[in-house]
Image (cartoon, rainbow, N blue to C red; front, top):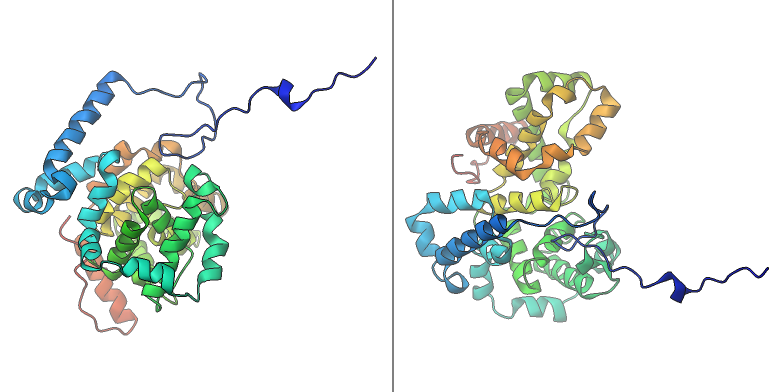
Length: 354
């Protein structure tokens, strides 16, 4: 009896890619096989938020600075609740100072991309496919997403040859490109690394990662002060923050954290500065404290790199993070770190009081 042939046409059409609302491939279908819908109440609530935000920022951001001066407490509260996704790109540019940099430097980005060469070009090309590989915008090899990411990173490596290019920068640029044009993303990267509003971040990527070392020292001391039982357990198990927290600072949680949580952190990070990274890190440890203090070394390392899903809920984690006060301690610890490393620097104006 002849074996029945199965050709491609009999298999039916290839199902479309299943994407979440941010454009990432979905790992697993929801239990009932259908994407979870948002209720009419949630849609209406989101529409009200968008209307409030539009009124606050004005057309193209025209009213932003005026509103910020008059009602900074309202701006801070609304940013902490989350910027509406449809306005996120514009608001990020306004709160970071990058919009002003763009307007003051017409044609500079184009010059950097088209007419300059970078010593980092091969490194950038090698790393491009590692940046958000599950996002539809960056999936296609040499596609528009990867080309834009290459252009932004190449332009920055030419703009600041002292920093050049370091792998973690790809996640910052990639995240920005999901919400704005190449040129806008480039100037926001400049605003962050050069310190348009907050303390410069370029030390995260310079040779020896000096700012990463400082942040890890500060975080280690904060854990010991605020979570002494866990700090003692870390000492016994010989755990230090470089084993689990470096990427938190280098990519501002954009590397391995759920995207919806990373976005909420970035909203606050761009407005309030790096202290939110310390606060979120402490909140995660605090939330998982009772489990972490029981774990031996290998399980502890795994747990610190793979937090449970319930710990990653922004509506639970972020209010806990906001309640943690770190500004004064960070300033004191920076002075302590500088003294320990033979520096005689004034404290940076990175944080306003929490």
